[in-house]
Image 1 (spheres, rainbow, N blue to C red):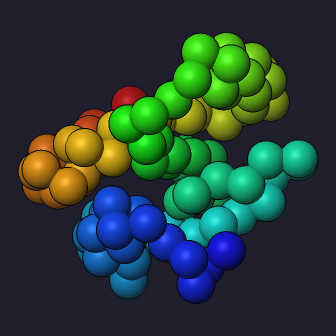
Image 2 (spheres, rainbow, N blue to C red):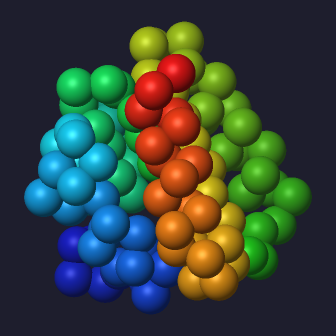
Length: 101
């Protein structure tokens, strides 16, 4: 999956890679039966870039998965792909805020 990033995932990865935010992020990490778009092991932060067209079924499935991950000690941040594409700096700021919670 690493070779098939969406444009929004690629744009955000350019801001997360190489410890640019002070922590190491990994791409496409398997956590249980879930694949995280980006994961910062030191802080247990999972960052998901969500496409704009989500069906209600996908939203409810994601909510269930997020609750399981939170119960397991992870923090999950979902960022709309449209925000990343429109303003990658604002999306990066959301990641920075989540890192410092």
